[in-house]
Image 1 (cartoon, rainbow, N blue to C red):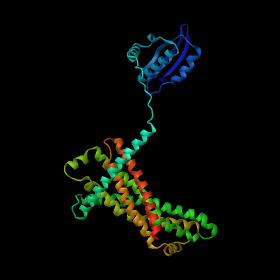
Image 2 (cartoon, rainbow, N blue to C red):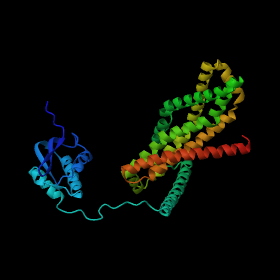
Image 3 (cartoon, rainbow, N blue to C red):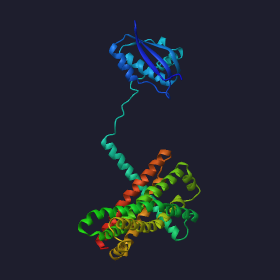
Image 4 (tube, one colour):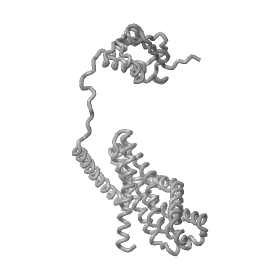
Length: 376
């Protein structure tokens, strides 16, 4: 089989150096490194560089790019290039390439923005986001009042579809994460409590941790990355396709028709998912205790029942409801705020996830401090 790889070979001639080019000089087949060739040419300091293209087969713009770079470097080092030794087609293309000299200052150096400019841009963006968020929350409140009066304009079939997408469809990932989190809590507690012979209190650690914090937080983070991002992508795509503008033109409120079913779906499903996550996390801790510490399931669940009252589960469920509102609000807000391009949809999706997670952590801290102050 004939080897058609792009090759070159340098030989000396009376005028200078002869560059023999052979094979297929195409982008898809690979072009030799120009820097390596220049390192071979410069030490000999030739007066002229000529070409031998008798064995040159197929070529495309890859060869032209290689030759233009070679000619430019040779001109900088005062090496004359005999372009007449190249094939006629290549000579014509080189003449076109050098027909108009490069304008001075064409390659401008892009300077970074000054610090004050960056601060000003961030401030303006924050003010715009805050104003848009207040308007968005206000429209949601008006939509909620219409919903209470039975005048909200949305399809209940959309509500049931969103409940299914946010609830039953998320059970698998919630199960996996919750069981693993419960096992991790039990394993970390076992490492320390085993030193004091207090392995039975692992049940207290897992039960309290899952009931008050981890069940709600992990469920909310899962829904932020799964459902909140989906809301932002869906509404962002509708914004790009001008479907939301068409709805406003027809007198249909996007808040009531698009946002409200998603908001109600997460408010309904998040507490239920939190209860399920609490149970699966406790089961994960029971697996570790039964397999590593010889604590039976009956002892484990009896210890949890005696130490973790229902009020702790109630706090976690309340947090999950708040987190559901925040995730749905952030996802829909970023989706409606999306620009008119595909990249804007990706940015809106990323921003929705980040905003949701930040709001979840802040809200959890606030609720935890309030519960501590009122003694719950």
